[in-house]
Image 1 (cartoon, rainbow, N blue to C red):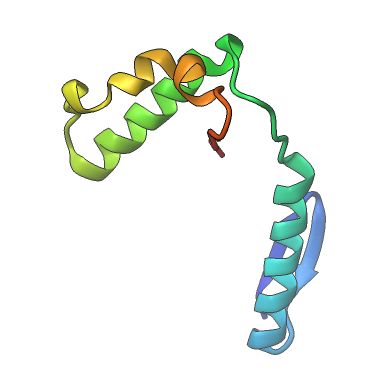
Image 2 (cartoon, one colour; image 1 turned 120 degrees about the vertical axis):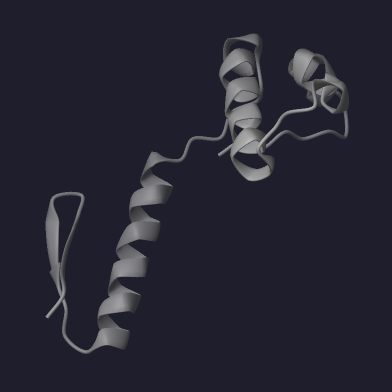
Length: 88
């Protein structure tokens, strides 16, 4: 029997399919409770750039900074009308 703890609550497994669905629902609820959507600002710009570049490094094994000039101007690039910037 599989036992998992999410947000301090123990979820005991029963049938695997049922347990997986309950676990997925609990994890989704936890993620939604921690999720905060805000407009990109100068306060977030450095952290966002670092997160994106770390993802590129992990995925591709290198970073070509010439391809990512928008990362130096996130607020200017993605705060205009008709633009949106998501970082989760």
